[in-house]
Image (tube, rainbow, N blue to C red; front, side, top):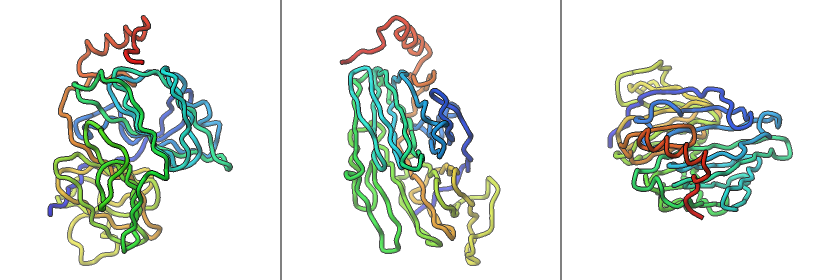
Length: 302
């Protein structure tokens, strides 16, 4: 087994999107190669309804997939094809925008006014950029959960993990998307396909990820393990760990435990031309998409 070196530890940046929604951006609108096939990850959590109720009014998407995972509150959505629905706590929507969709997403808090969820963007390969849009709406009850003997837990949204397979199917980059919790002070070794790019996004608790290589960022002490010789990276809420290649990662939870999203996918290795929510392969394709938005021919299916 080869432990994945850690390329970088990233802290989220406060960002405003939609009609004024305050959120934290882990990555996006920058380098795409290291995260390929993923483009963006936003963490939208807030206890103040004024910071999210304006939502994300009508906007286009083309050439990508948007993955929304709700932990608290609800998100109502609708699109230009007449589809409507509502995601509640624990639900997932995997939307393949394909050739183009116009949609809106409107968050609402729970009884205490709390809203929490994530949106991940995944790129589509050139052969599927103009495919027909589709939705995979996954209720919380359909997402398999696994609890290991050491108390570690996982919700498997997509891909194979700990003997279970997530309900999302037919996705181009064959990604894995797992919500993992590790109990306080427990250490866990987790396999990750060596051919994939991978990252972990920590959204509760704290801990350390062990690195197989020489330090390339600020390191901390060895998480209370005097026998450890590998450098470790201290991480906590709102941290993203970007991994290099290998076939496993090692995480040790801090005193309050740790919870994180582990996401991996096969890189597309294709050129990226990006304009907001439209992601194509060339600037000419982007210009065509913008022209179609202006002249009313953007929607190709339905």
